Amino acid sequence: MASYSASFQTLESLRDLINKSLDAVEKSIVDHDDPALTLDSCESHPIHSRLGADLEAALKTISSATNMLRALCDPNTYLNDTIYGYHDETALFVACQADIANHLGKKEHSIQTLAQKTGLNEEKLARYLRNLCNKQIFRETADNRFANNLLSVTFQSEAKRALVGHCADECRTSSSKAWEALIHPDYKDATEANKAPFNLAYDTDLTVFEWVKSVRPDIGQRANTAMAGKGLNLEQYLALYPWHLEGTKTIIDVGAGVGAGTLPILKDNLNLRVRVQDRPESESKFHEYLKNSYPEFEQSDRVKFIGHDFFTPQKEAGDIYFLRHVIHDWPDEEARQILSHCAAKMSLGNKLLILEHMLAPTYRDTSQSSREVAPRPLLANWGQSVVSRLDLQMLACLNAKERTETQYRALIENTGLKVVRVWRNAGLDTVLECIKA
Image (cartoon, helix red, strand yellow):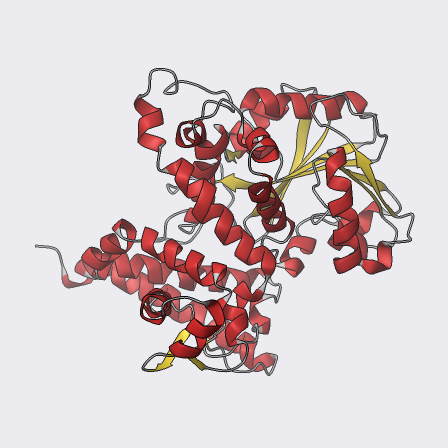
């Protein structure tokens, strides 16, 4: 029989991690005279945007440890949450389609009022909202009375609602064909972007990008809205790479959409210039986004839109070529084409920055630095399943992928480039800094 201390070793380790991390969070709140940290508030808490490696690690530790505790202490409920979890996404989709967060505003409302505002059946709507309340999204303040909270107000944003629609609609429909694609003789070993589960789900030979352009432009517009504002922790994002050291350089934002990834950088660094590159048909959306979100740049020569297809040779000269969440959209062959076109245009002294989510193993890899690896007994990657979920989303829609650092290095070094530095912080994004080989 195991000793008493050995029997409780994992639990005690988790308790110690949680207690130390809670102390760090409490100290930060007290030192900054913050308001109470509560889900009942509809205001974002300053601690979630405060930078600092120790604080960010403490918050990640609490989240990861409590998730592990639930799996350890209540495995049946934990597994049932996974088995039945697709209903949570459905409930969130309903709430977003009905725009419940904006209908509620800062007040609580009865389900009768919400049903009148949305035109939906009140009994059915209440059931979807109660499911979300169990996930800490919205509050039921009394029988059939609902209010916003810290999480639900997120969905007052059109971009966040669009992201939910994108994931719950075309991405989930594609994912439902995963097993069929794995055993289908024409799909099981395919790497082409038009041989993905998406193609079985929608019975098309077009890639998802071609399909939304020619068949369902409404879905394409929703995806563009989602990608333009898909949840930057702005302080963390801006701190990921030392843009302030780049002086007066020009950034070529390749495959930029409307420039949502570089315009915040431009605003924070007054000497930089940006050339937003995307397909020509994106230009009107770029100007609309500029007008609504960054009107100070409408008449500025610091930002300019340039129509460009990144599968064709790069013609624009710049100092920094920037690819944000572009490479993960494509299988290796297409990804190499995009990178090679950038490499061919680059000169000595230029650099290419690839910003992506990066897969990290749940096991402990000796090649990783101690800063990157969670303390025992947590999963080595902090249990950040969002990146592995995005990896499966890429697989479902395009046979594309999120990649490990090793996979990125192999991909990049076959295109005339080499990685000279990897930039990380506590967020999900990583920047690979590349120069000509």
